[in-house]
Image (tube, rainbow, N blue to C red):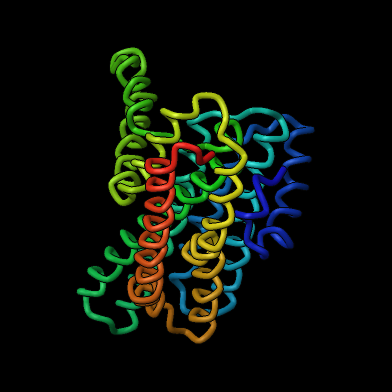
Length: 297
């Protein structure tokens, strides 16, 4: 039920995926859908954030356990979708935004707690900047993972969307008859557009590949891209869940959760910038290769 070992972090493989797999098995037996699991995870993740507001460590520890369980559910929903072949674009969108709900709760709780402990009101500025940073980091990490899966497994093995195809689906919906679906798709289109704006050379590569190879990618391109791109996957993992949560837990244990905002901005953002630049170099290399070498692939 894993997408690929290339894109999976060790903590996920050894801890979250096994737990998520068992949850998925139970849910499959009793008929709980992947989207229902995702929604339940939102409640647990938001509850975890609320518990980080309190200075009592034992309450924080309960919040940590809830957050770990929320991420286990997040692992379960995707595995359940693949296990039951109950996959949908709405499910992917919901799953993608679930973590944003968790961390919005965490950011607000930490900011309120820190202000209660003596920080000035301008801490909200760092709270918001860290939140925006988190959303960009997660969006680009998720996008680069899907690009990697596209090149090693093809279209069927990836969840890679683009604004052009999304616009076609969006225009086919009616505001009067499909208000909710059109509203969600409009937000997702903006989300995808931002991913594309931050990866211009990658967009050029994807357009070139899709125009040249209609059915499946040539083996040589898949192997070469995987070789060059796989080292970047560790950076997508660093800016995602596990690294930030480990450090968040440390700062909660020492009673200084405000450090999390500065970690998000001044440690994870430079990693994001480096990751984007490296990905663009890889994309540029293959654009040149495909453009200048007609025998390649």
